[in-house]
Image 1 (tube, rainbow, N blue to C red):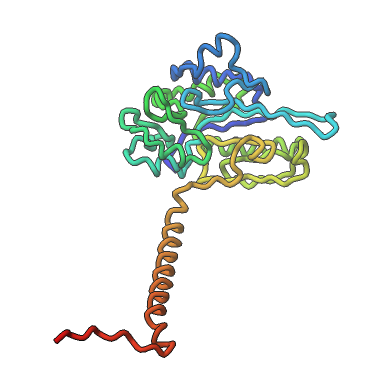
Image 2 (image 1 turned 180 degrees about the horizontal axis):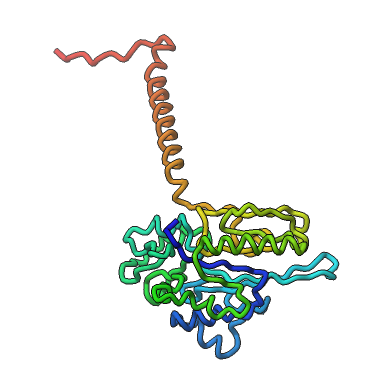
Length: 298
């Protein structure tokens, strides 16, 4: 981890779904609307919840998720909400596969993009296990949350965290945020909310889900892809929030796959050579005379 790395702790138990963070992100980064006409004509909502964006994209760098859970008899219900963005992973798959160096690690440990160096190859899109990076058809480059690099350089912190009225988003040193997260999980467990755990770092917490379809299942802190500089306190399984339970970097499979391919090629080569020799030897094995050389004509 970069010394004094900065990031954010996202406490989903405090999120009210107000979307102030989405608006602040749009305004500060001057991000355009994906479909301005649909917004003005009130056609931009998904009609399945209060979610009006559905996913992260090249123009939506922050997305507030709404998850509704009901018991089988519909008498028990709860809403889970989460403000999602780029995780600025310690092992950043996007950064590792970028062929031009457009993606780079900043002095704060975040992952930023040199827009003038990006060639729009989209290798990073497939390398991100969280589906964060998106290709921007207007510019021919990729975009994602850059953790308000310009604001961090002046000590202002992220626009989304500044705008959050409930402190669901907290900006600061990652080590300080981890201590805050551990204390918050202990507090919730003491209140009987043993669902709480941390997604992004293993701080040693574990508990049991008390509500929803996954009631009774065990949950525990998870360190993923080397740790996340933007990490989450969750109240249910990661899949409920649309997060991978065991995210993997595709390039981690390249060396094993190459080894398997070489071994397979060697086996096929030996098998082919053996088959060729067997065909050559079959006439002799059946007692047939070997083919005679043609006689010269006198």
